[in-house]
Image (cartoon, rainbow, N blue to C red; front, side, top):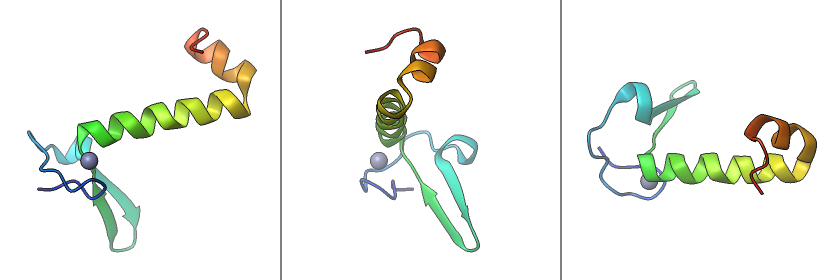
Length: 62
Ligand SMILES: [Zn+2]
């Protein structure tokens, strides 16, 4: 199984963890590296959009 985003093979593929259903017939398989990047990216975006909420939740990451 290869990652839909970066194309790398997903080691220890786990549908519960790596398979994202997008509705209809669309789905994506995401490797742990890309998941990590997405989470960090979203945290950064949230921190910028909602500084107070993000700081409260993550206890002051940047
Ligand atoms: Zn990937």
